[in-house]
Length: 194
Image (cartoon, rainbow, N blue to C red):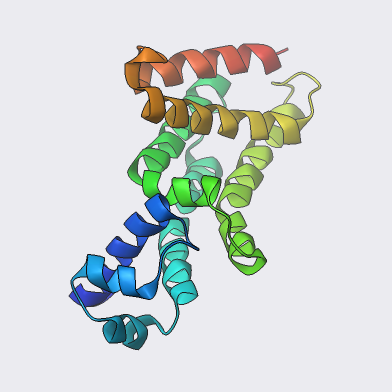
């Protein structure tokens, strides 16, 4: 994430606080206390609370977007179910490993500049998925669909599942993540294969 232990502590504390108290509800004083440092150290390392969030966002983008871009550009099999299963697993891994970050994005009011910063990742994922689906359609492997809606639905099914699973545990859906991905991809693919 960063280059010094104190910066890492500040980023970790900020991520936790932003996801539980919201961006607006988190002060630099709270961040310093949670990180076990001084408020001056927070300012010295980042300048502003917004800069902390910017660094968190920048550290998250490459983790999934580049992996999915690489897969789509070079390793797809052109078997819809197999490719979408791989993409779904990569997406779910990112969501699961960055759940606090996802909570900030989904549920906390942020100013326009921060919201715009946060759009790069989901819009980038959607763009890559659309590109893949467009190529599959050009090969005659998809029926006539709205590719924009299909890409959005695919990403939303993973996010929705993890949000509900996190909130309600097994009382919502008693299934492991791998089984969920397999079944949801199969259902999704059946709806778009000619």
